Structure formats: C-alpha cells, structure tokens
Length: 509
Ligand code: 6PG
Image 1 (spheres, rainbow, N blue to C red):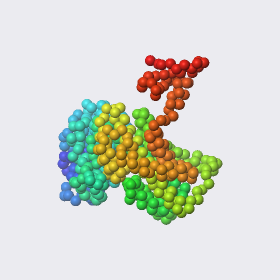
Image 2: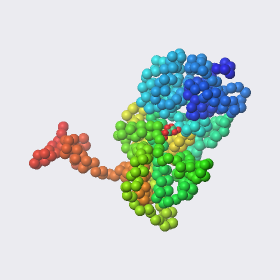
Image 3: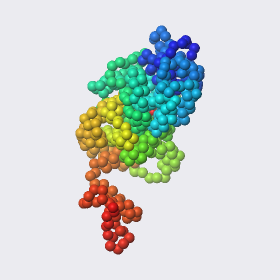
C-alpha cells in the first residue's frame, strides 16, 4: 500500500472487468477500498482509473501487493469482496486468506456466478475460519460500474454489515413506475428510489436465484433471436428493417434491456466492411454454464422449464456449425414464403404477440422453479422482492418485472404466474396470434424452439386431461408400475395382470 496508511472499509480481490467496475462504484459511494489481484497491471489500472475519476481530495482505492497486506489495511472485522471466476479460484483465494490470517468473525463475500451447491458447501467448510457470505451480481460491466442488481444470501448477521454498502451501490428504481433511475456518470450517486438489492435467504439461495435469473436470460435472448431469424430468413427482411421493428416493439410491452441492446447490435456497422456487423458474427453461441445448471435443476426438482432448456439446446445446436452446413445442402425444407405486404404486416403483429406470450411463459417457468426449489431446500423466498430487484441493474431488466412483482404482491403464494389474473388475460388475448406465428415459422422452416416450447408449456398447463393416462397404462403393462384410477379413492394403486388371459385388475396395498 503505497498511498499512505488509511484503514479501508473493505477489501477487494479480483480486478477483472466486473471487479474493477464494482470497486469504482464502491468508491463513488464513499467507501475506501484496499484492492488486490494476482496481476499487478490490474491493480495499477483500477488506481489509475480512480485517480482520473476521483473528484475528492483523498485517494479511495489502495493497492496491496499480498493477501497479508490486504488484511492489514482493513477495519476490523474485515469485509472482503471476491470477484474471481466461479469454481476452484474461489477456494484458492479462500485458502490464501486463511494462510494470511483471516479471522473467524471476518466476512468474505463471493460475488461470482458460483454454483449454489458450492456456496452451501463453502459456508460449512470455512465456518471456523471466516463467515462466507455470497452475493450474486447481475448487470455486466456497466451494471457493476453504475448500479447492478444484487442477490445476497447467507448469514443474516453478515447481511446487516453488507446491507448499507450493497444498497448504496445497487441500481435504483422509481417505486411507483418500476423504471430505473438513470446513473451513468463517474462520481454520480443516487440516494432516492428502491435499491435493487434484497436479502434472498440462507447460503446458496442467492446463487440459486441468480442461476434462475440467467436461465430466464437464456430463454429471453433465444426468443428474441428466433424472432430475428424468422424476420430475416422467413420474411426476408433486411437487418435495418428488423432493427426498426425491434425498436418499435421496445416501446411497448416488450420493452426490455435485451430488446434495446438487440437493436444496438443490429444497427452496428463493421468499420472495415461498412455492413451490419451482426451478419459477420459467427453463428456459434458460447455459454458459461448457468443456463445449463438451471435446466438441470428444473429436471431434478421436477419443475417443467422447457423454454429455458430449449434455449440451452439452441446454443448447443448452434455450435455444430460444420454439421449444419453439411445438412443444409442435403435436408429438404419448405419453399420460401411469398407473403403479400399485408400478410407480412399481419405476421409481424402475430410474432410480436408470440414473443410476449413466450416471454411470460419463460418467466413463469423460472419463478415456479424457484418456488419448488425453495420448498425442497427449506428457503423462504419473497418472489415480489426478487422481481423488484430485477427491475433494474440486471440483464433481464424490464418494466415487465413490475407486473410480476405486482402479481406476487396480490398473492404471495401464487403457484404459477399463468394463474395470475393479469397474466392470464394477457395470454388469453394473444394466444391465437402466438399460434399463428408458430405455424408460420413452421411453414417457413425456421427453427423456433423457444417460441414453440413455451406454447407447449402453455397448452400443457391449461390441459385438464393429458395423455399420461395411456402412459401409466404402458408403464403398468411392461413394468407393473401401477396406476391410480379417477373413479376410485386417490392414492390407491392398481395393476392389471397383463400376461394372464383374463387381465384382471388387482389392488396393490
Ligand atoms: C449477468 C449475466 C452474467 C454473464 C453470464 C453470461 O447477469 O450479468 O448473466 O452473469 O454475462 O454469465 O452467461 P453465458 O456466457 O453463459 O451466456
């Protein structure tokens, strides 16, 4: 620490893009931070940036050259924020802090996208060494700098210490309108509005909720991408025309950060070719794992989340570029659509409604998944509060989240968003257009797994009787798995002696 002896409010380890911006955000909000990273240039980088942006007369960010020095520069009990990649790096840093002499009443906050079960295990593992608290962060680098959405969980005592800091740096929302309060300049501090930071629950709960946020993010992105694909390859619209349509959609019920950035991406021209950059980007999607974890969890919990899972599959399919190129020349599809101008306009309106309906279903899946997981793990999640902290700062931020918050305020034990009056009405009014859009995409030969899996979800949920009766019959036939009868008492199990001539039904006790 070269800039002089000041005991800092908190320590910060990991100065990648997210870490650096969180440090500057903390500094803007009046906190002194001792920082450490294995890479010296990153330490110098954040100090340099703070010197440029700092309008006060004293330094706010102090560089440290070791874990021991970092601990020695903090007020006690120490508060240390980690912004390191999920997985082994978190444990490596924790072990280093133990060697450097961290105390049992010190708090370490993991802000990475850790797997929630790792967080639960870590809280136990390091219990005698320090208090592991976690706080997932959403919002990317701009969110981290000017106000992220924060999903803290772990020891309630640790939360009392973290809360004022987190509420200061989080994105803020106008409570009445549900709209974000803008903050986009270094030095700018927002003290009004509702902070997008709320205690989620015990260890692991916050990371679970962030994981589901990302699962929903995958679905939301895929829905938009399918609409782009249909407009481009089904209707033959230009990239600029699609950007215009998305821009218009972004001012109505589809208003969201993801729609907004899609317009920006579509409009951006490559400097070297002068053409739309999006047309030059290789169509192979990456993924770091949180969408996959959500899909796996939905299968484990037994909660249908087909649109989220479909979004993960869509990324996997995209990665098979060579195979797709090969298949594109051999597998036959429909002839190109030849819609009149009026038919095209009608289709675009139907597609708009399809996106909205699919989006409602994707969020319904995510919220139901959190509800069932909470039941399984003994967490008491406040879904209105979760929807509220997603109204600003995070990647899925949208005014739409205000409607979800209101649904859970109307009924805090709501089983599924589709049952809420507002959402039921929105879906009922638009479901016909949704079907037409899905039929159109099928006839154009454009893949639309997210739009149609959401429709499958919607139709399954509103089906009083599903063909699982036949399925139970099949299971009983080959495996004597038994079935219940609708004309007998619930819970009573029956089996048909299928291999006998009289195929008698017997009761299984
Ligand atoms: C966020 C993002 C963030 C990150 C994702 C990207 O909420 O700020 O979700 O967590 O951008 O991990 O995930 P993929 O690389 O899997 O798309």
